[in-house]
Amino acid sequence: MSAKNRQKFELLILQARYLRAQLEVDKKTYEESQKSFSESFNQRVKEALTKEQRKNLEKATKQKEKEKEIKKEKVPNDEIKQESKAHHPESIKKIYKGIATKSHPDKLVNVSEIEADIKKQLFREAQSAMENQDFLNLFDIAKALDVEIPEPEKGQIDTLEKNIKDVKNEIKQIKETSAWHWYHSSDEKKDEIMVRYIQYVYESHIK
Image (cartoon, rainbow, N blue to C red; front, side, top):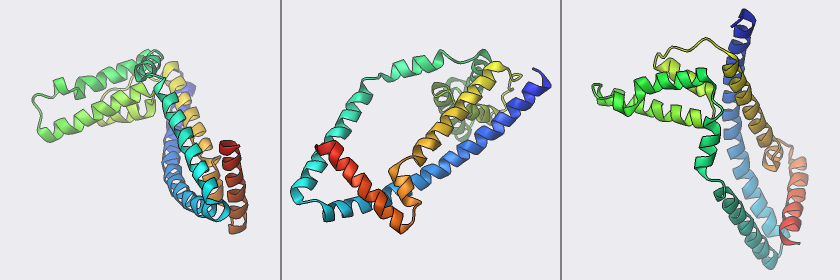
């Protein structure tokens, strides 16, 4: 790999680490915002809707949630795993093989119980990283186990770029939610957002 591509690879690693850390922060903030938003929503619904309207809204919301769960069940996990495994470049497969050599349960016969537990956990995380095409996490696990990382090549760069794109999309989705906007708005704006949200939920679920 050229010096230019190696530099690109290293910069992508740094960007991926930053975005992953940002996502974790945003997820925690979103959990807080969702909790506060839900509490405010429930209070406003009690004030704005009649008992019968609240009952209908609750029923419709539960039905929507049930439909989402049914939809998720229609996609078998095995199909998702097979699809993700089909796109691994050879260099990433080589990294995973090196991790498995040092952390697979069958390879831990002559190590202490503590070391075995740590390596088994790393092996499970590596499996998850492969299934989710999370190269950055796989790279970190390899470093923790002192596994040699192959010379960066196009497959690694492509996977890293995909990881970065996925994280950016996840951050974007979080910041586009009503709960996020409400949480980061002034009190006056909060009221406007909540009223619009209640109207949207009621009209889309009931009418």
